[in-house]
Image (cartoon, rainbow, N blue to C red; front, side):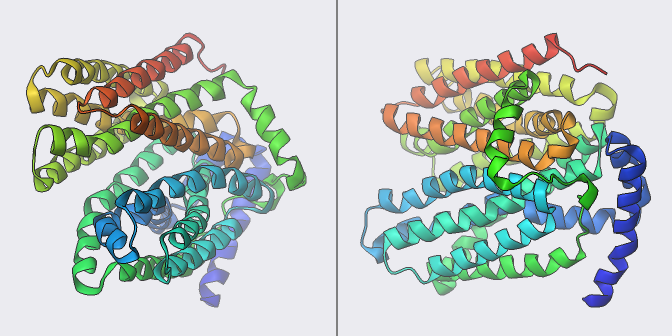
Length: 429
C-alpha cells in the first residue's frame, strides 16, 4: 500500500501545478482530465462505489423489515422509522461534510465518514431494541452521506463543463445497479443468516471501500482549500444561497426529488394494495423505472456535449411535468387502469437521468472553489424535499393513488418552473 501511495505523489503534484497555472478555473479541470487518463477507470469505479452508499445502505435490508419488526417485538411502522431517520441524517450530515471537505480536502472526510458508516453498521447489527437500531441508523447515515456528497465534489474537482456532466451520468448509471441488486441480495442473506448479517455485510463493504480509498488521489490541492475556520461555514452557506442561479438549480433537483420520493413511498400501496399486483410484479415495475434512469443517463452522457446540460435538464423537467399530469389524471379518475398509472409514473422516475446530474453540475459550475459546500447544499435540499414529500404523503394517504400522483404533479410543475427560469436567464460567459 505504501508503494501505491508513492505512485500517487507525481499525479498530485501535476494536479497542484495545473490548478496553480490556471488559477483554479474550469481549464484546470479539463487539463487534469487529460493529464491522468490512465487513472480514469479505477477512479470511476471508486467514485461509483462512494455514490452507491445512498442506495446500498437502505435497499439491501428492505426485505428484512417485517422480520426485524417481529424479532424486535415492535410494529412494522416503528422499523420503517429506520428509513426516514436515515434520510434525515443523510440530508443534514451533508452540510457538515461539505464545509469540512472545502477546508481539509476530500479524502480525509471520506475516510472519517466511512469509519462512522462502519461503526453505525456494526451498531445496527448488534442492536437489541428498535430505538437503538434507529439511533445507529442515524450514525450510519451521517457517515454514508460523506461518501456521496464528496464523490460529487470530486467529479467537479476533476472535470469541467460537459465533461463533468458526462462523468456524473456515468457514475449514476453504475450506481443504479444497486437498487436492482440490493433487495435480491438482502433477501438471500435474510434466508441464509438472518437480518443482522445484512448489517455485518454493510460493515464489511465499508471497510473494503476504506481500503480502496488508498488508490484514490486527493482531488483538492492545498492551495485551493479554504482557510476560513469551520465556525464560519454556516455564513458561507447563507452567502451561497443568495445566488439566484444556484437556488434555481437547487429548486429543479429538490422539487424533482419531492416527486420521486412520493413515487417511491406511494407506489407499493398504489400498485400492490389498490391494483392488486403481486410483489413480484411490483418489483418488475420498479425495476422498469431504474432501467429508464440508466437509459436516460446513457443518453445524457452521449448528448450533453452536443446539446448542453441546461437544455437536457429543461427537457427532463418538461417531460416530468407532463408525465406527472398524466399520472395525476389516472390517479384521480382511474383512466387507463394500472397501465394508465404505471407508464407516466415510470416516465417521471426515468427523468432522474436527465435532471439530477445536470442540476448538480449546473449548481457546481459557478463555484469551483466551494464544490464541497455547494454539493452539500444541493444534496441536503434534495433529500430534505424528499423527506418532506414522504411525510405529506403519509398524512394525506387514502385508499387511492391520487395523493401520490398529486404530489408528483405539483412537484413536476415546480421543477419545470425553476428550469424555465434558468432558461430565461442563461449563464454569463
